[in-house]
Length: 217
Image (cartoon, rainbow, N blue to C red; front, side):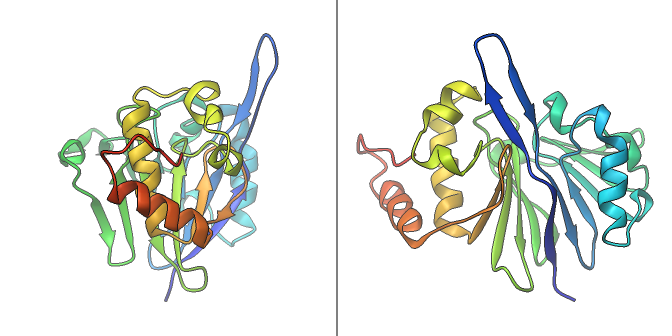
């Protein structure tokens, strides 16, 4: 049985003079293992339960919960998923047991042959991305705020300054690596988007010439 990626809710973000309005994308990976990625704010509990029910699932049927990082709009309903192993940034746990995994050295956490959780720091220093080989969509990366939204491909200010970045240079490198290797991206605060051949070619060129001053994103 191949995996399918279902975005339960598209994330969004907008800024005015005094405040930002934002919520994260919430994504279901359905297949041999059921995985929820990013659980929105605590005020979204009923929405998540309803979104899962549209796919004939309930929170107790989720095997893994992944939060791409620890900001409050990405972790608000983690306690719905008490049968799941939790991967929150670089931390892996179940109940009061924590599992040591070397995300810090770049080691992916492999769930199975088709799903891995890889370290992609930048937005925070402990961000992760879920990479899924799917049945119908090719390879999908669920990136959290590594990508704010599709518009930040042409307007890097959106991810580097509006969303904020703890390490912009590392985030650029990780963005280019993801762009060069996947077919679709679910960003932290916008709809899922297709990675075009132009995006892939330019990102690969940047990675090949990593000592140059040109950064695609």
